[in-house]
Image (cartoon, rainbow, N blue to C red; front, side):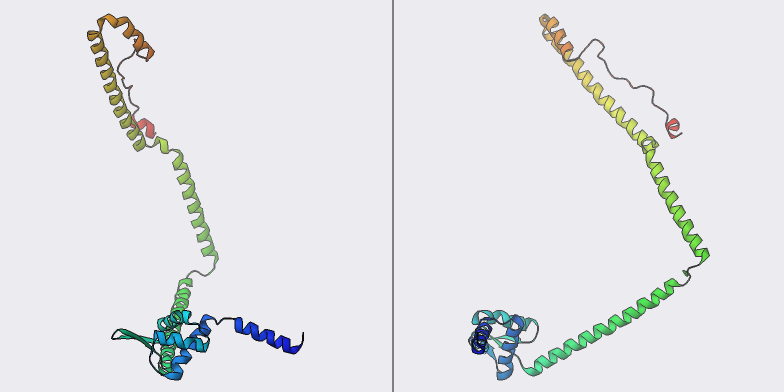
Length: 231
C-alpha cells in the first residue's frame, strides 16, 4: 500500500468518526461567539451541521451549555432565544474560579483546625508506662464486664421477674382449662338428661375421646417461693 492509499484511508476514517460531546459543545459555542447574535433553536439546528454537529443532537448540546451557564436562554413572546457572548463566558469562568478558590481556602482553614484539634487531643496521651498500665487495666475491666454479661445470660431462666411472669401465665392457663372442663361436664349432663336410653353408647364415646373416670378440674400445686428461686 502506497502513501497515497494510506492518506486516503486515514481521511475516510476521520470523516466517519463522530464528534464527542465536548467537541460538539465547542463547535456550538463557536457559532455564538463568531456571530454574537441571538438564535432560535431551529436556526441553531440548521447552523450546527456546518460545524459538524448533526441537527438531531443540537438541542441536547445547547441545553447542556445552558445548564452550565455557558449559554443564556430566555423566552420573548412565544419564541425562545439563545445567545452567548465571549464576555459572558469569561465572567462565568471568573465566577467559577472565585468559588473554587473560596472552597479551597475554606478547606485549608478546616484542615488547620483539625490539625490543631488533633494536637490538643494528643496532650496527656503521650506514650508512658503509667498510660500503658491504665490502658491495660481498662481492657481487663472491659473483658471482665463481658464475661459477667455472658455468665448472667446463663441464669436468665431463673430471673425472679421471668419466674413471676411464668407463674401468672400458668394461673391463666389453669383457669382456661377449667372453663373447658366445666363446659364438658355441662355437655355430659345435658346428654344424660336428653338421651337416657343411650347411656352406654355415651360412656363408650367419652372413653374414646379420653374422658376417663379420673377426668376432673385442674388444681395448682403449691407455688415455689420467689425467694428460693432467687437464691
